[in-house]
Amino acid sequence: MIDVEENVKNNEDYWVYCDVPMGRLIKDMQIGDGHFNALFDTGSERSYISPDVPMDNCVTLDEPFSVKIGGKTRIVKKRCIMNGAINGLKFDFSAFPLDELGIIDGKKVDILIGATAMEEWDIIIDPKDRKMNLKGLKNREFLEL
Image 1 (cartoon, one colour):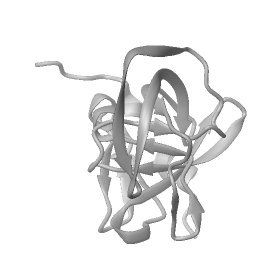
Image 2 (cartoon, helix red, strand yellow):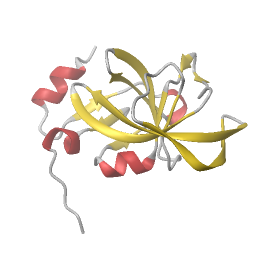
Image 3 (cartoon, rainbow, N blue to C red):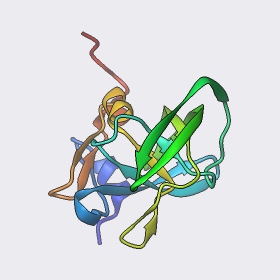
Image 4 (cartoon, rainbow, N blue to C red):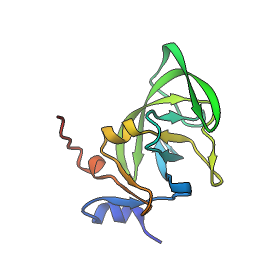
């Protein structure tokens, strides 16, 4: 069994291993004092959270929109700024609360991290090899073009 925290501390490129149901990466993520299953999904532009995740810093949208997730259409009415951590590496992201995000391979999805948040923090996923590069979170240095 790989010790993910030791892998982050000792590995120069900061790749960490994840659960990979159906080619998607699921990783434990900390929000506040709680731990939640986070699905990292490059196929989703936006990020979403379930009601089980503590929500602060939320605003009501002037105009709600609909989104299809898990075969269901849902109405999005709020946006929240979330503070979370992966392997102790802190980052913030914008997320839309939904009534549920679904279950993948028996795991309830509490947080869906979309491509925009991953790009913003330079999080790179490799579903084939079941790993995620957290170098951007570790170094906290970014190049803006």
